[in-house]
Length: 347
Ligand SMILES: [Zn+2]
Ligand SMILES: [Zn+2]
Image 1 (cartoon, rainbow, N blue to C red):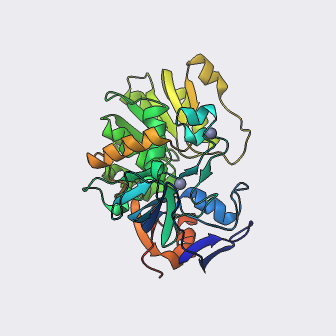
Image 2 (tube, rainbow, N blue to C red; image 1 turned 60 degrees about the horizontal axis):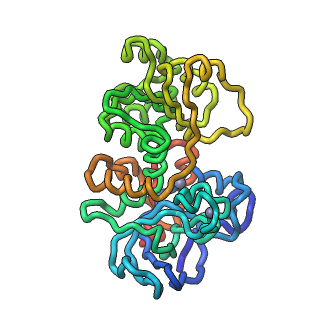
Image 3 (tube, protein in one colour; image 1 turned 90 degrees about the horizontal axis):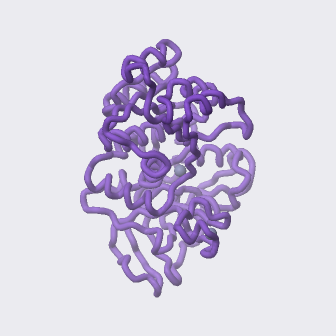
């Protein structure tokens, strides 16, 4: 079968190759891939910035498809089911994190599209526990974005809470920021989203999607906007989806005292100069959010089923398996918001 494979470490080294089709065993489920989302992490892998990814490996970890075969131990998933899958392919099964299904924190977790072959291919293998059958009203395209949706649900509803009276600040109008805005809006809260001048189109997209107020911080005073919307108290919750420390530092003093700030974006550097004074004086609960875990998938699929979120509107372009390089170039240059790979096509 055709697959988009990272063949060796370093810049690029990504090729469309013929590899063996995966075969089921034990609790494994073979899925004919419909769509996969291209993730920011795929860009890092393309650039050779991820030291931990195993090579060679077929990339792709956000996907949907149809079950075509199941292993002898599979109980509930059937051939023909429309599904999406968590990225967890294997865990150690004995650490304290596995005991509570915090698989995102298991030190020996193996992920689809990073340590084992992923979904930029005609077929992908998963394990029954990771596979979720889709409600009938959820499209395969939206379902392909359940993984990033679950990352946003984990950040907003597990590492924080969202009340309907909350005013919530989201920094960064990339795919994660926009999806997170959908999750926050699904809880009835008010969203303020920030970006810079190059994000003009994305901020407009955000407003059309239902974000209450967007702020281009290169031309508008964020403090004034927040003060006017919160009686001068500051926002109830903040989320960084930019990984840009100066933006985080600008936001920290604009949080309400006792607010929660969730760090979703990853910083380019391990150590950064941070406004800890605001965290202390305002008693801010600053928390990290890493990836997603099974509970976030269950909530994500409920949100999809209830049509409270609509991930597919973020997909501005669809390419075939042979379109990976073109797509990466589009994403690096900010020409598209989210690109999906259609595994039934090559071109
Ligand atoms: Zn991803
Ligand atoms: Zn474990």
